[in-house]
Length: 426
Image 1 (cartoon, rainbow, N blue to C red):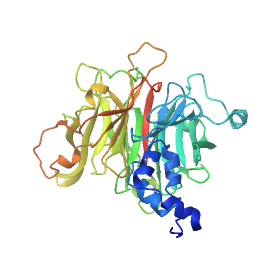
Image 2: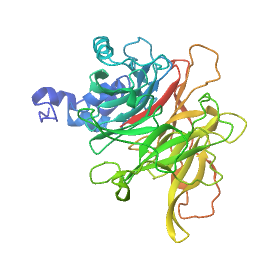
Image 3: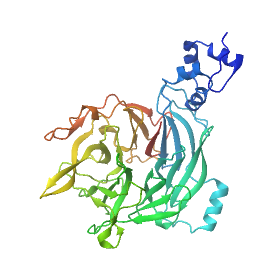
């Protein structure tokens, strides 16, 4: 029997492990948690070769109705057991509180001014750091929590930043060793040190943006030169219902690609230029848009209320184009259409796999009168953008088919009370 060493083992024991047949290992691995499979892949070369083709993708979902985070397998074929709750699901691996632990929470509220009565226990947006650490914006904290990977999944590490300047946080981006944070209450975007959480700079609306904008989610462009924020003119209405008039827009905030700082206007004493709205075509009536995300094809996707009487939400697709208008270059939005299969599920959050074309959505029935809202986490095999003729200038917006939709969490076998944002952790 071979005694050659694997990645982490040596001698006869490793040879025994490598001697197990592929068929036997696949039967065993079919009952193993995704987190355990990731560890098992390091045992020896043979195990790694068997596990590598399997889908080991992870999703993190914010569950606003119960102030939780849920760690899911992106593959429904894995037999995963939910940790910390005792319940089971084909997808849910771990559920834990989206809050500081008790000891640190007590110290936090003792040393800082507590949130007012309108601050809810709402976990919102997610971002992943360079060491796979997880960042979460949370309303009650008025800031950002950091979680670190552990054997069970993730565990709380620290409150990175908090305060009224970050009140109602609804957008996170990690780039340039910085954390960019949206504050809905202040209509601002703050750049924080990823290491210390210290404020580096803060941006508001550009000159001429006179309305108060409700900012709802943020991403960074593939070229890493600007932030894109979904927003609409504030109406102080119910966020679960469309506004009477669609005032939504995609807002852009330029950043310096050399260091990640906000672009400044040399003609105005170096002040930050601020965010501004990108002109959109009439076909793209954005109504309370949220959660802008790029797919791997470079198409921007945004969740918004559909322009009809159903009151449901859909995922719109578009790209940003530069066009010559009146002898100068302007940026415009090109509307391609929407995700056809997702229309019946009123999706809110959206994420894309970093390794495949898979799309992940969260869906919540906000019309439910039940105290426990069994939301869904859905998967599509593709975003459908590879079928778009990006060179065409006259293709009208249309429903784009993305294949068969699968429920990773169906709202019955594992109850997620109002799932909101979702993040792919490949």
